Length: 193
Image (cartoon, rainbow, N blue to C red):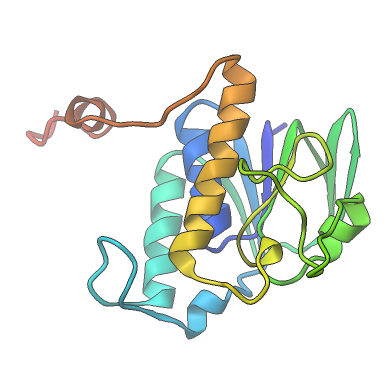
């Protein structure tokens, strides 16, 4: 059973999954691959000079796969319910998780089905940590912004949600700040060791 279920595999969802899995929370991503990133070309994403959106997604997917995220590619979530944690339903099966991150772009149907509150602008109402009115459920990216959509903002929203989940789990403010020594420990020292 994953501790974190992420619905959506664009920049917001994959950023959330990266942070939670990397920091010890089993994470599953459900992705229909319907993200707008396939129609995008990035010129203004920090650290990326110029890259096709689909190529950028492949880089993100490779990165989360490297940390062990359980990625359900091409799997549509048909329903989400809260109770003692969350139940994520697909056509094939149900998955239980302690936390839920909704990263479905402008499609807010699952947030509505879950009972999340909405703003007057008809976007999902979240606090600064991206948590919705449903305890333990987070919404990110285009679903929380009225026509203010941008890949780096979405990734930041996903990271904010993940950091709050990690703070909740660890019982103190959590900071994900890597150093060169962290990278060497995770990926070897560059000498093949």
